[in-house]
Amino acid sequence: MSGDRQMIAMDRHDALAMVAGVAFGRVVFTDQALPAIRPVNHVIDDESVIIRTHLGSALSAVTGSSEVGVVAYEADDIDPDKRLGWSVVITGMAEAIEDEATVARYEEILRPWVSRPMDRVIRIVPKIVSGFWLAESRGA
Amino acid sequence: MSGDRQMIAMDRHDALAMVAGVAFGRVVFTDQALPAIRPVNHVIDDESVIIRTHLGSALSAVTGSSEVGVVAYEADDIDPDKRLGWSVVITGMAEAIEDEATVARYEEILRPWVSRPMDRVIRIVPKIVSGFWLAESRGA
Image (cartoon, rainbow over all chains, first blue to last red):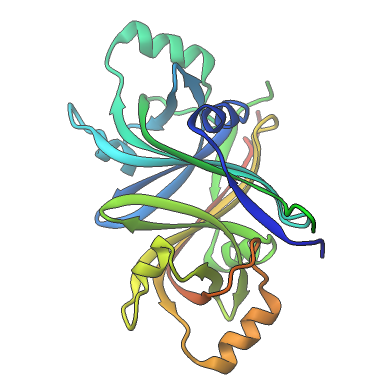
């Protein structure tokens, strides 16, 4: 196993850029008072995380009708052998996008892994953005 | 982009085996009423997920003193280009391991990414185990 590692904090700009550079992450929410998590693909648009979810899913309940809910969104790329990589966590409000033209635009660029007849497009507006790099310790 | 994909549910045995086959995942918990998530490395021992966490971390608050808390643990391996892979979510009770011999044994086999002077060993006992494969649709 290789040498010591350190965690180096990322600033907001770098953190959002790292998430934008990968195709998927994991949305974290509360489902009937229990912590829940689902992997989904995403696009980043003007600092917001755009995802699609099935209408019947637990996440849809978080953003049901005009409600918004607090979620976290995580993406990472970590090499467990080298113990190098990064992770970013975005915490913010999730809201269902209602505007039809906007929904149509995102549906063009964001294809869900599994096609389903009805889904909705969710925007997560970042409030807290944190991230770190796992890097080699200096002098190690 | 390749053809249609389907989600195929995994049974508990397969789901735990997939998590055991990778080195790390993400622990999901509630931190001051907000959804929180941290990537960590793990070992699976007798169906439980064993992780280490820094004493000062938010996760330690979930398992503080003799309390136990509900967490989710997620691992996945998804190829976003091929849209093939798997994801498993384990929901269960997280408890700090207090027995010194057990702690010492896990500390031998579970080395945290970043060494810190004090940490604790957490056991997540699975209650709900769910997982899916993203697979090519039959006949697609």
